[in-house]
Amino acid sequence: MTTTIEEHYRTLIPGLGALLDFLGASHVRAVAFLVAICLVSYLPGFFNIPPVDRDEARFVQATKQMIESGDYVDIRFQEEVRYKKPVGIYWLQAAAVRAAEGLGASDPRTTIWLYRLPSLIGAIGAVLLTYWTALAFGTRRTAYLSALMLACSLLLGVEARLAKTDAMLLLTVVAAFGALARAYLAAPFPPLEGEGRARSARGGVEESAPTRLAALADLPRSGGGSKRDWLVPAMFWTALAGGVLLKGPVILILVALAVAALVVRDRSAHWLAGLRPAAGAAWLLLLVLPWFVAILRRTGVSFFVESIGNDLLSKMVGAQESHGAPPGYYLATFWVTFWPAAPLAAVAAARVWQHHREPATQFLLAWLVPAWLLFELVPTKLPHYVLPLYPAIAILIARTMAQGGLSHDRRLVRANILWPAVTVMLPIAAVIAVIVLRRQLGLLAWPFSAAAMIFGFLAWRFYETDGAERSLLRAAVAAIMLSVAVPGAIVPLLRPLFPSALLAYNVHPDCERPLYASAGYHEPSLVFLFGTSTRLTDGQGAADFLLEGGCRFAFIEARHERAFVQRAEAIGLRYAPGPRVEGINYTAGHSFSIAIYRSEGRS
Image (cartoon, rainbow, N blue to C red):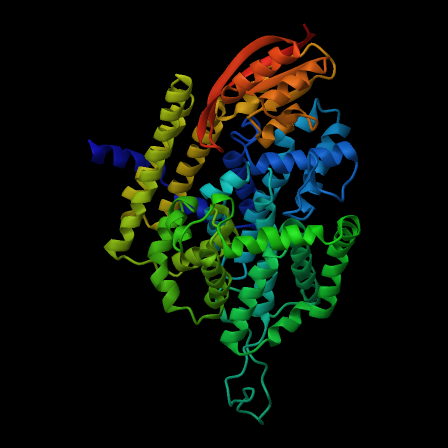
C-alpha cells in the first residue's frame, strides 16, 4: 500500500527539477517566486494576531507616542524613557501608520498590523538580498535555493510578524555583507609571502593577479566596471548606517569580526580599498549623526549610558531579563529555528570544512563563525540574535549542494528526520493548546497540517533517491503549510494568551474619551490598546482612579481585588461590575483572572 502511494505521488509531482530550471532561467522569475513564497508564508496571522508582549508591544507603544506627541527624536513608553535601541524602527513604523492615516484608514494608531509592515518588508527584502548576495558565490539556481532556505525558516517567519527591529536589521546585514563579498571576491589574490606578481613567459611582463571572483568557475571573469566601483561601496556604507540606526553597534560588530577574520587569514587588507573607506565613513556619519546629535542635545549622555552601558554591555557580561543560557544554546535551537533547511547543514558541514581555504567559503565562514562564537559566549541569549548569520549558512549549504558535496554518512543523514518530526510536533502541539484553552478543535488548521505532515514525510522518504534539492522543495512546501496552519489558523484562536486583546473585546464604552486603569496586570499591550494615559497601579490606586469620576474603567487582577474593595468601601466609591476575563499571562508565567469595573461616582 505504501509503495502504491509513493508511486502515485511521483506521477503527480514529477517536475521539481524542471521547476528549479524554470526559476533559475531569469532573475525576474526567481525574484517574483521568492516574493510570492514570502507573502504566502508571512501573511497568515499577520493581520489578526494581537499585539505580542512584551517587546513588540513596547516598540509599537513608543511609536504611537511619537505620533501623538509629534516628537520624533525622543523615545518613551508612557513617562519612562526607552533608550535601549536607536530611533530607526520607530521612524519606519510611524511612517507606515501616518501613511495609513493619510489614506483614511480606520483607527490606524491601534491597528497592530500597520506597525508590522516594516518587519514584513524587512523580511522580504532580506530574502531578496540573500538571493543577490548568493549570486556572488554561484549560479542563479544556487542563489534561489539560498534565498528559499531563509524565506521558509521558522525564525524569520516569526520575526516577519513582529513589529520590532530584527527583520529590518537582517535586511541591512545582508545588504552590507553582499556588498562586502563583492569587494572581497573582486579584489586580486594577494601574492604569497616572498613572491612578487606573476610574470608571463614572454618578455617578463607582469600579469594582473587573478581575482577571487574569477576563481569561481560559474561567474564572469571580471572585477567589475566603474558603476560597481561606487555602487557597491555606497550600498555597504548605507546598509551600515541603517543597521546603526536600527540597533546601534550590532551591525558594526558583525562586519568588524568578519573583516578581522579575513584580514588575519589573508595577511592583507588591500581589498578594503575597494569599499572607498574615507568617503564611505563620511557618508555613514552624515546619515547617522543628525539623530544622535539631536538625542544628545535632548538627553545629554543618558541615551548612550542606557543603550550601550545598561543594555548592550550588560548583555555581554550577564544574563539580562532572565534570558541567560549556557554556550551551545544556539547550536541546540538552530535545528528548529532554521528548519526546514537545518538538516542539510549537518550533511554539508564536512564538505564546507574541507574547502574552507577557498575564497568564497572563507568569506562565508568569516561571516558566520566569529560572530556565532561571540553569541554563544555572551550570557544573554535569545533565538533571534543569530538570525543575521543564517544567510551565510544558507549560501554554504546551497553551494555544497551545487557541487555535489553533501555527505552520505548515515549518521548525518539521520538529521533529515527533522523534516517529518517538526511537521508533526508543531501542529499537534498547537491543536492541543486550542483544545485546552478554548475547547475548540481548530478544524481550519487540520488540512494544512495534514499537507505539512505529508510533504515533510516525503522530503525525508525520498531524500536518498531524489536528492537534496527536491527534498528541500518538498520541505519548503511543508513549511508554508505550517505557516498557514499554526500562525494563520491556530494562534489567533488562542485568545486566553492575549489578555489585553480579551479586555478590549469585553469593554464597550459608550462615551467619547474613556479612561482606564489596571491593578496588577501591567503588560505593555494594555497601554497600546487602551491609550497612553492608561494608569498602571494597584488595587487601592484603581479605586482612587475610579473615584475621580467620568467615564472610567478599572481592570482588577484577582490578587488585587481585596485591596480594591476595601479601599472602595473606605472612600465611598460606587462602581458597577462588568465581565471577568480569564486566561494565561505567558510573559509572567501564570494564569490570570481580571475583573472589569466601571465608575459610578461617590455613594
